[in-house]
Image (cartoon, rainbow, N blue to C red):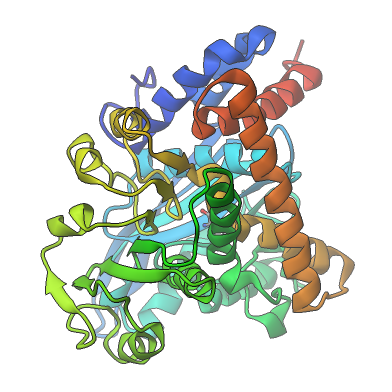
Length: 423
Ligand code: GLU
């Protein structure tokens, strides 16, 4: 339960995160003395974002940027545009970034931002005005050495380009390193768009091998067909798996023979969703969870796997492409039922890892080939998932707790070595 006066809601994503921290605490030995540092964000900024709409009216939107922890380096984390964004959610997402960057041993802290808006309801000009005003409101706390935003749900490379341009105007020179996930010709990195999905596949492949689950013929369910879900799906299909069901905000489609992703891609680009695709049958959103499957990839939003759904899931392996998709009691239920879960803080870390490469390339003004990026990404992800696996075996705990042990040890060690100012 949160002991912060500004977080009263006790069932949101921040509570899920706090529960995860409580579970790791007993493993941290003397570092446990510093654990309260992880139970509160270092800095949380709430801004009003007023914009003039195309019809001349003025609308106000709530904007946030939370820097959860900066002990190991500048804040890092995406910006979400979604109608459900609130402080509770942005705090949890920023905290998961702290853990994630530490699990991958990237020299960053954790941060996250968001605007409570449905970007689909804005025109391109309104979206640009919203982005520029939001950037201007948070510009005093971001920067290449302070806090580096990136895309998340509802934002993309174009939005990052506007953030870079707006921030640069304020500085009087072009500052490419203030955001990652930018268009490639504006200092972005090759391989960034596909990096999160690629990381889901790489970690999934490693763990599937360890639990002796062959990818050839494996039946896969994917929730979310954005950047993350679609790329992971393509890579699994290349390895001989079949995607039997996909769910997104437009509906749930099912084909036990395997959905043809090439055809779906064409349909998706036209319709902005999977609902209504002729190469599969429509099923109810709740039936998605009980489809016969070997691997489940939640790649949409948090809070999707409840304990009721966990009872129905037939998968042997869950790959958390999304941040925070599983409630703690559902986590317990899945583990009790013998399901292996690759947690978000390692499974979807491919995105922030290539963001790190982008930032390094921007700092050096020297850019790498896509092959070089993918090779370095694969190497870091394989190393990290193997370290997590090893810790889980050694401590006889879940992969989530193991990832939190590795991450929290690094963060709290940095906290301890830096000391508490003024001492
Ligand atoms: N939004 C992504 C995440 O949740 C990427 C963050 C980044 O690249 O900084 O990991």
